[in-house]
Length: 222
Ligand code: CDP
Image (cartoon, rainbow, N blue to C red; front, top):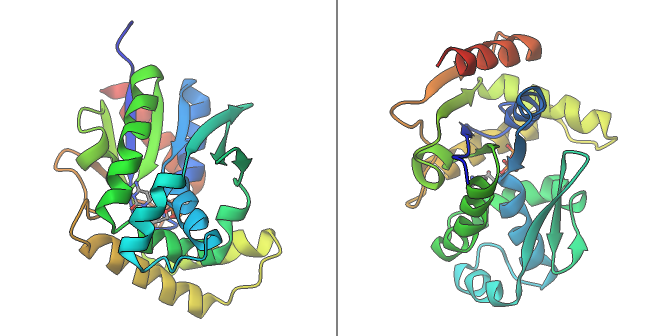
């Protein structure tokens, strides 16, 4: 089989990774893989099983009863947990912190590793997450670290929720964004940090189209 192309996009919460990655995936005809959805799926399954997502031992144990798969419908990723499509429910605000909780657990990261690598083995992928370039796909041809100030990211998330009809005030979103940044960057395993070869893109003062154009150009140049 021919070598597949992988594009890694890492960065903090609400930096715009998923919408940018989707646009690039469409432009280049690659599959977009949202790895955050996998951590959200674990968080959802643990919560549904009545487990406190901060209870590392219980979360690790519950993985035995969990099967996660990703399906693609018209280019959109669907997340299937034990046969049930959970793609919408895992987006609820309470799942964000819960996902950050379970992402610290080494058994959880090991559980999700092969799933992510298999997707990249069989498809050209644009994969977004926290540790894609540093751990999951260190040989990814293109490595980006997409970031923006916490204030801009909280504002973007606020507008995103508002559009979906979810009430969340800006101040609590800003607080949560900072807390998640702290958790994700300071955990022991696979902390959020740019790969040494990553192209850093700070989108604080860039429009969506500018970011997509800039990243597409960098991919075409290399
Ligand atoms: O979309 P948003 O930026 O809110 O978060 P997400 O990408 O859905 O990820 C939710 C949580 O999963 C993050 O806060 C991380 O703690 C964790 N995560 C991770 O540890 N590694 C990844 N590759 C992706 C997500």
